[in-house]
Length: 557
Image 1 (cartoon, one colour):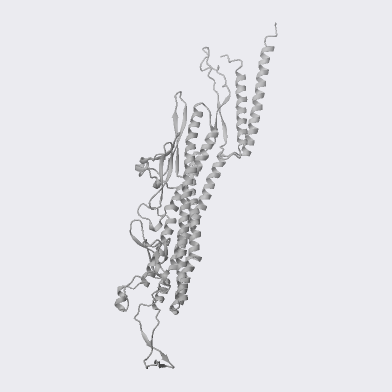
Image 2 (tube, helix red, strand yellow; image 1 turned 180 degrees about the horizontal axis):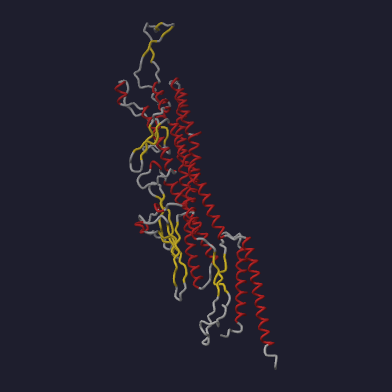
């Protein structure tokens, strides 16, 4: 069959346009080589097949003709969804470990001071002063120094507890900032970009730059929460298909339901709630109204569903009770664990000292000269509260009377006064006796603080008692420091490993999606030759057509 006269011009024009589009994409890639989150683009080139048919064409014969060149069907991004998923999963793990490491570092500065130079030294000073007082129980000056030394112990307890409480409040503040300024802002922006991208796709625009921004936001979100990105094709009238994007919380929801964070242009947000015990919880709220979504979990509480990311790290530091955790409570050794451990040490210290200083019914049976009496050395401030590290103080009785310590519980013994080895008599001939000084109870105080059989017992969230530690008071502080060092060391090793894995995924992803100047330079040369060849083809077609028009039919006129 006869072919269209100017068909080759159309083929050459398409070749020029295709080469030009390719050069435009290369130029755009080079211009964005340092743009954060930019994904390398490429022109999708397809062949244009011939759709011209003639009623005179003999099918099966050799009357067909070549296709009509090539054209660019769109501008696509070069991404690997598998690497995106692996990168974001590891980013979630890295986020948890990084926040934990920061929190443990804050705790470590306090516990190190308490264990090495703080409470450790103050208890040592107290033991030393008790030893001096045992040999000088009648000295009011040494009694005052001893009381001041004990006061230093209580103040060290108070300062350590207050410092840990300050770390806890700081972590809660950081959690609220992360939820408000990072997570919620990101979720809202992703939902907005979803709608913009959807509209652009409906009108034929690739919206690649908007997709780059969205991918960057999703990467950032994955460092705070464990997320799962779901892409669903949406079929439009006329045979067109566009993509819908939703983001779900990987932890799952109640009854196996997925917790949706973003669904196209609809988004939910998170809110931080504080319980009566000071623990933090995360609620799921509607992004538009702010109302709690109660069907997402227990009354909207999705704390247990957040299994990774920086938010999980904050929750571990804020809620982690370690050995003190009950059923359903956070078992990580966070700030609450160290506060409660310090409380156990303070409570045990005060209880043993108060008990030793008081006179019990058993003491009265042994020494009828005594009267049963509570003689506390330590109390709580305000009074009437259970003694903790935060409120332990010197009792009012000891503050009023420096020699409030019970030096002995043994019967008073009168011994004769000797002079030159002989009994001494007064002027009336009566033998002189004196009360024998006995400070055996002070030595019991010293032994208590140095005994390696002291039991430090705690109570977990279920009300069950357990032995936290057995040993001296100084060893209990060392044990607490050792637990922290172990957690910090293990967490640091895991964080270093996670950084290596995350960096590996980032490098692999960049090798595919990032702009390579060397590769773009090669593409530019290829497209330049492509463009020159298409232009030369246009010239050849023009010359051939000129020959037909100007020379054919001239002979024989």
